[in-house]
Image (cartoon, rainbow over all chains, first blue to last red):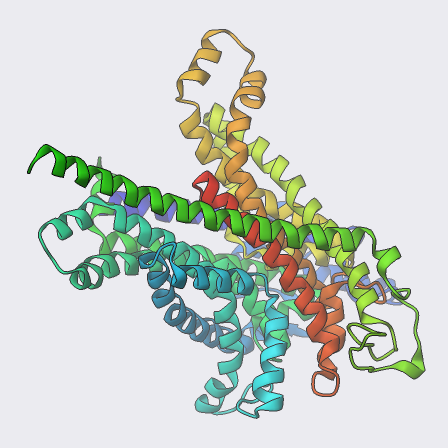
Length: 315
Length: 296
């Protein structure tokens, strides 16, 4: 049944989420020395340090601290950043939209790039177009995302004056325009992964019996590809995207810094630089929860789109 | 259909298949040797950095800043008049060493854990695989950043972070392979002969598990080197003035318009290095009939 499979997946995801919450909670306790002292610097007075320990909740027993952390996170209360003198919740709230826009925009661009190229690569297997696509993806796979970003800025913004160098505009249209170059960078960074995986899943589809059967029925090659192969490949794209989501987010974190976008990625980088532990903790939890959630959704959607998955789980 | 015509049909099918296999093999050979050539050259350059480099990596010549690439300075000079080619050679050392250590130490750890999980099943599998799930659920750069926040910025933090994260994919890959392998006749036979379990896992099963891990490790090296470069770029990896390719790109980022070579050329070195590993990995994947992608 759908529900049995779905509830098992939900339970599994919840378990992983608990694990992620333990890891992000444990982070602050793994800091050698006193996190409050490190946060305030060596010249802070003893009373200020003990006050900070109290604000961070470090003076309570471990179990209480963990439960407070989890219940707080569930209520949207993510703790307090001593360095930035603000609640982590408000810091995150101000910066969530740019990151979401960036992730969404780059996913769309990456899919637009990867699906046709992956398809061509598989259909022309071991012929010139396939070789060219594979070489190009290998080289782009080896490119550091931030370097690619800088090179694109150099070529498209500084020399050709086509796009803004960096920043994040006021109106929605300006925001999209500012996000175009960063999104393109992330898409170029993500696309090789997608193309590779798509190529091999399309090759699997091409080898399968129902394609053989479709050809045997005398359908034109065009119809076989458009109706049978493409449909199955699009299901694969959903999974491929979900599997590579962590990769996508890793790219986003770095690219936000390169293009000066006030999102969650640049927030975690400044937090790590200044060793602002509550912010690092919360963002680890948020990113983890996001990846787990999207993977779960993709998995459930997969079962809805593809009846075979439902059937396979009943046997 | 006459017997001769039928025979001809079968033969032509076989010939077509043969041609396809030949095409694949030629391509795999070509990519393998191109990749291996690139890697050999770069490893040699990194090892012999002190011999090849025309200048010390950190010597400043303040009057010779921002020189264009030329025969005297192959990659030009940076803001402090340091020779970028020499710095790139020394930087290559740092990146290559990290790439190899942060890939193959986790490979050994992950393979051992994955093999144990897949062979014993039961509570060992549950514990190991749940920890693996949690590690993979977190975007790797976020987890490594968090670890660097704890340990403190610098190369040590990056090493600890990458090793703490990278093993998980090898564990997942190895467990999946082990689940299939443990049902095979020769493992069952070894069990029947009363061999000790460690002997079965490490002497009989592990040799069969190396191939897929090796193929994946080629992509993983590229990822690990890029993570080091990214962290240095973000200012929490290798600290100046130690030359490292990512840090060099970061330093050159502000001079893009006036001195494009400072950021661009070290980046190209990284791209060539990564392409070398990717080419070899792709050829190995073709050879072993494996895919070069993230294990699920």
